[in-house]
Image 1 (spheres, rainbow, N blue to C red):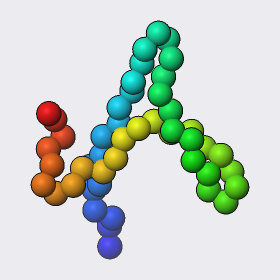
Image 2 (image 1 turned 120 degrees about the vertical axis):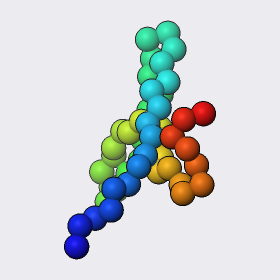
Image 3 (image 1 turned 135 degrees about the vertical axis):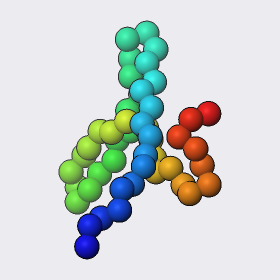
Image 4 (image 1 turned 90 degrees about the horizontal axis):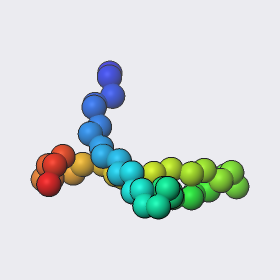
Amino acid sequence: MENPIRNAVRCFLIENDRVVCIEHKVNCIGYYDIPGGKIEDNETSYS
């Protein structure tokens, strides 16, 4: 069985040559990511 396609969005917030990042840890290892999330069934991919 194939995995269904998961639609999501990402947002690059840039101001004064700085980018917003999110830091999170998994099993004591730190990761950086960019803000975003899964698009819910009742949402659109645009505003």
